[in-house]
Length: 270
DNA sequence: CTAAATACCTGATGGC
DNA sequence: TGCCATCAGGTATTTA
Image 1 (tube, protein in one colour):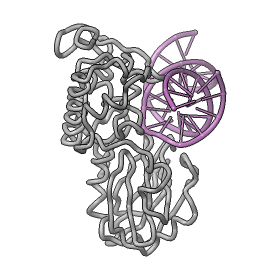
Image 2 (tube, helix red, strand yellow):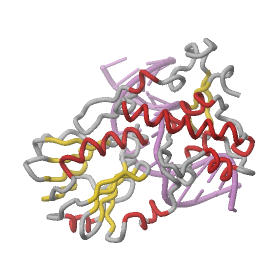
Image 3 (cartoon, chains in turn red, green, orange):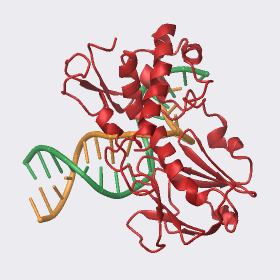
């Protein structure tokens, strides 16, 4: 399930095949993703990708005439292949690239999206109101503290809100809160400034460490070469219900917060 | 305005 | 072995 580290891993993997390369053709087998793949994406045909970047969990591939905006949803992946026709089930979109390479968008659950805009990508409605990048200097404990005053929403939901900060999904939210010693169900408005400083630091460190490991593979995440990540070996709480806490030995608890499975240690997190 | 619930989708899993 | 129910989860959208 791609969160920021998995998207970053994907971006780095596709970059050598996409950046400063021409898209020779786009073939859409299944346009029904989260939103229909727009027909005018074919305007990207024969265009060179001159900019390739990540914004939150979106991948933006910019050309002179417009930008392709991709999101992997929760089961999406982009892989680079040598064959156009090694088509597996759920291979929905095929990008023909230079040098007989192909980029294939694969997404069993079709929660992802592939969009096209002629305007500057940052103006696209889905991107325009996003919060800061967690790995930027703009993202600090002070920022979180300011944004959270009088908010009753659980701190876990708060940091998973992309309008507050992008890229923190269900796995890394649980992990960062464990590292910062904060109970996930606590109201965001009742978290202290000092705790927010620690939380911002831990969000940065857990995401950075996960990128170094090539992301987390629990079920289906694979990078652009079809390989899994290894960060799951480093997880402290996620998916470890009933197992002993790495810090204190107490059993890890699971609870549903905001419709999402949440893991924490009742001893280490207050 | 906020907060919570819902919708989208398929595959894996567990119970019978 | 088959069938049904449940869960997984990113996030825009809808409802309260």
